[in-house]
Image 1: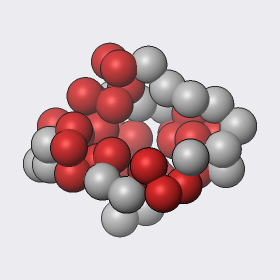
Image 2 (image 1 turned 30 degrees about the horizontal axis):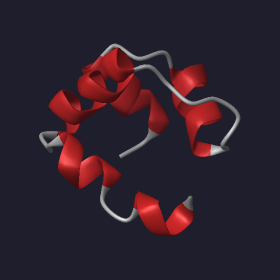
Image 3 (image 1 turned 120 degrees about the vertical axis):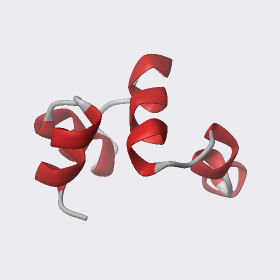
Length: 54
C-alpha cells in the first residue's frame, strides 16, 4: 500500500505518514486509531515488536 492510498483511506495527511515512517514525529492516539481502522488491525498489532525498537 502506498502512502497516498493509506492517506486516502485513513484520513491522515500523507506528509504525516511520511514523517512517521522516517521517525520525525510521534503521532497522536487519534492518528494511530485512524491508521488501525484503515488497515483493519488492532492497536496491539500495530505496536507489536515496538518494545524491541525502543
